[in-house]
Length: 328
Image (cartoon, rainbow, N blue to C red; front, side, top):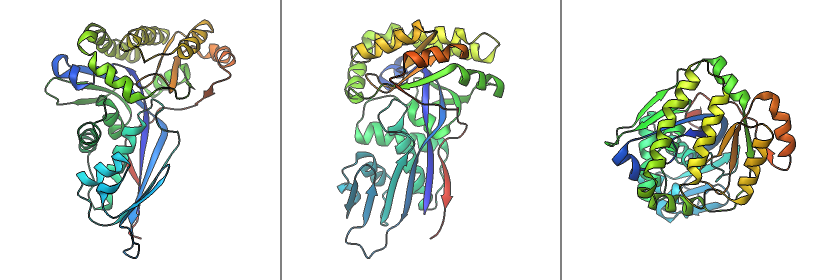
C-alpha cells in the first residue's frame, strides 16, 4: 500500500496571471503558501478475485474493469496518462471539503499521480508532478484555470512562482524567517463562506475576459514583488493587509461572478471590525475569506463573523509526499 499526503494552499497575490492566456503574452507571477491541511490518497493492489479490476472510493465508490470507465474525471485521466494496467484500489480522504478555494482539485490530482507512480516503483520530482497534473486537469479533463495550484501542491512551502511566456516555470522559496512567518500567521484569519456558484463557470468567464482585464492583471502581477518586499523586510504587516485589499478590489473587477452580496457584506463587516484587507480564495463565488488584521483585532472580527466557520491553520513546508509505503 502507498499513501500520499498533499497540502492545500492559500494564494495571496497574482492569481489570474497564471492563466496561459495571460502569461503566454505578458508573463505571470503568484505568491502563495501551503497550509497544514491535506488530502490523502491511498493506492493498493487489488486481488484478481474481484469481478472488477479497479475500484475508487471518494464521495462515492466506483468499481470498473478499465480506467476509462471511471466517472471521476481526474481518476480516469490520471490512470490513462500513466497507462495503469495492474488492478488497484484508490481511496481518498481530506481534512477539508473540496471546492473551497484552497486548491483541492489540484491537490487531489498531484496526490494521486504521486501515489500511483510510487505504487509502480517510480518516485517523481515536484516539477514532474506539477507538469503531469497540469496535463491531466487542463489538457485531458479540460478544466479552466491557471497553473499555480499544481505547482504549490507539488512543491509546498511559501513560494513565488513565475510563469514566463515560454512556459518554463520558475519556483522559488521566499527568504522568510521563521519569526516573520509566524508573525504573518498570527495576522491571518480564514472564514468559510460556503458554496454558492460553480468555480468552473467563473473561471471560464475570467478566461474569456483576459484581453479586457490586461491592465488589472498587470497590476496584480506587480503586487507579487511588492508583497515579497514587505515580507522580506521589517515593514509592519498592516502594509501586507493594505495590499491584499487593493488586490481584492482588482480581483472583483475580473468577472461579475467573483463576489456576491453576502461575500461583500462579510468582507466589509470584517474591515469595519479592524481587518486591514483580505480576499476571497480561489475562483470566487464561494469558499474561504482570508483576512489580515492585527492580532488585537481578531476577537472583534470573530464576534462580527460569528455565524461563519473559522479555520485555524499554520503554514506548511512540504509538498506532496509519500507518508506510507508497504509491499503488503
